[in-house]
Amino acid sequence: RALGILHHLQRIGAQPGDLLILHVASNEQFLDAFWACLYGGIVPVPVAVGISDEHKHKLLRIARQLGEPLLYTDRKLHERLSAFAAEQGQATTWQALERRSFLIDQLDDISREGVPARVAPDQTAFIQFSSGSTSEPKGVVLTHRNLLTNMDGVTQAIGLAERDVTVSWLPLYHDMGLIGFHLMMMYAGAR
Image 1 (tube, one colour):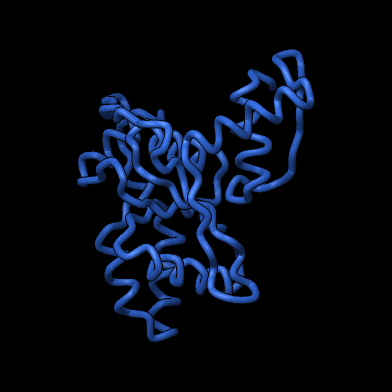
Image 2 (cartoon, rainbow, N blue to C red; image 1 turned 180 degrees about the vertical axis):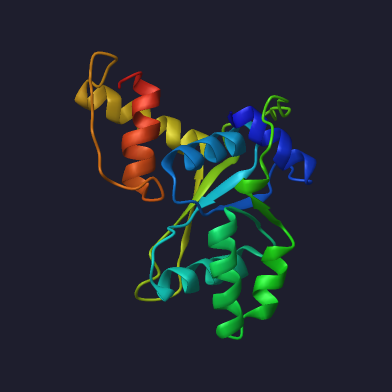
């Protein structure tokens, strides 16, 4: 599924190194798009959907910081963001983001695979933003080497292996949800 989504992202012009705000409520859709980005060398930027206006403000602040990111979301969230931006006088920020939006609802066929990129260890894997609750959200750039080194150290330190089963309630846009309970388990082969 990830390679099929990558095909669509590449079709709309996404290239290695492009930044993509990942704004979806479904874990399955999140993971499909996250892995599509990793395969294609596109840099995912997970952002919480949330229900408050502060979550929408955060997304718009992050979009301004990133310059001209892509946005991966669904039609319903897209419409909410559009209305919110208009209410808040953020039309310029929204127009730049809207031009580079890809709606999950447009995915009609994922049978054609995108072309995986050659990714080097020191390339950016993804950008994790702070909550922004006390100031502007701050982005932490994580390279593939950062992640692999961290996951290797943790799995060795705690002895995490294929025989282990874990559970988490943390959302995937959170660093512990994404790194600690998704990527770490994939790396260790745990369930």
